[in-house]
Length: 222
Image (cartoon, rainbow, N blue to C red; front, top):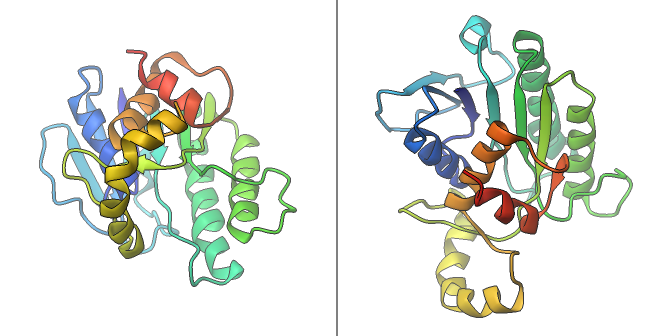
């Protein structure tokens, strides 16, 4: 399989990249982002673009089996217009380009638990994510899967790029055993999320929208 990853320098993207590079049936990974990953691997190529709305080298994006769209930002401190530009506009510009170049592609979008598919709720980020999910489902993919993880535990030295999350994770780690007992199946890791992505590409998934329990179940399928 040939796989494109957008956002491979973020916490989720780093986990996806790690699992793709470890997978025997993944022959090539193209990491697309504003900055380089800093990693070197025989399977890995990189396309660095300061503006992801300008992917002029579109031929580099042709002939891929799947896209893992892990690019995202926190809505904290952003206006709805600014958050929409990053979360909706960039995602759809990329997705429309890829759907045209790769009609047999599986597209996986990392959304979030609590996303509002009605697009009418009070929470700004949830509305924008919902609008993005809905638009992605209208494009002509082989398959599209909308991943809605909640809490994600970083493993293998992976760290979030969001300062607030980097502060919170050390405080929450001692509570993880208790949280797992209280909320079974609700907590993912960067590893399990990456494995769930690969399983969805290989075998499909039961529904287009996948919440934490379904993602953890999917991660157990080779």
